[in-house]
Length: 171
Image (cartoon, rainbow, N blue to C red; front, side, top):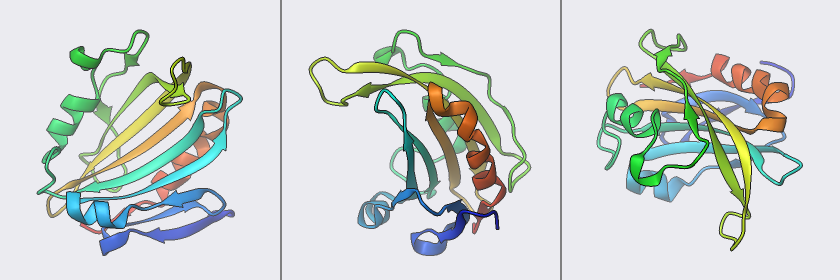
């Protein structure tokens, strides 16, 4: 295991991963069981504009209410939503990504965080996202998400790569 990392096992043991030891970890267990979405959300350093670098690992069970398939997840996340378009948001192509499964896909996008999130005049902070979607071997699928303010993106991408390398789906 890389230095500064620890083993994490999700509620229900849907996955294990090596995650940064000193980052905040949030696992909404009751909500996950109710919605069939088992996850851990990791919060790392904060940018000069107040946006946090985040890594999320999510297992969407096959009976999830919204995302029943990888294809639906990609359709709703890997291209702009015309009803909620954010000026300046860009999406890269969906491409293969070999991590724990030969049919994994990845895409990148540039979007924004609004700081403070519910403020009357929030600051629009540029954010880079790198998403990897992994089909489950027995149904459902996983999404691993790197969400980084632009000024923290390059220096911390190696942390996400370590999380990807240490990710082990159980299904």
